[in-house]
Image (tube, rainbow, N blue to C red; front, top):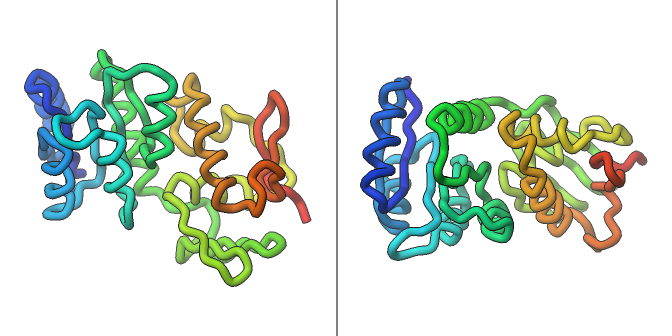
Length: 227
């Protein structure tokens, strides 16, 4: 069955370009021209991917992304003319999976779409619970417990935690993590990883400034602490 993609953009020229491009590759395409229209469309028929512009006429795209993430695991690919790092960080912090700056090449966009859909379809690399200190990661149920408290993680936060926790003590380079979580197209966007690590630490650590689980290896990457 063809993947359903929702394009959210108020520029007719973008819709007129992207919709035929994606349909020609076999995707089912729906469109919305406002933030509320996007939320309504997702409620009516959830897509496998949302391609979201930030400059919408009614609700800012970052807020739309945040609302889409509430109780849903639909990947969100932001497509925006805003190229400042703070805009990228805001979108990623709201739960976006990837960020493409306008103008964009059609092949790059298609590659990002394919990568987002592959990641959403793929299962985590391990099965069964991972127990580290007072932390339990139930991969099958996609639940994380710290003692008796359940932690609510986004899909990307969960992916990062599993990627690091399954091999405690092993240093994973930034490039390896970017490739595993976002795909090869994210190699030149380290802010993706910085935002994700910070958001995960805020939920995971008792004191994010003094992390016990996700440790930084300066100039190299990150590792999950050993016992």
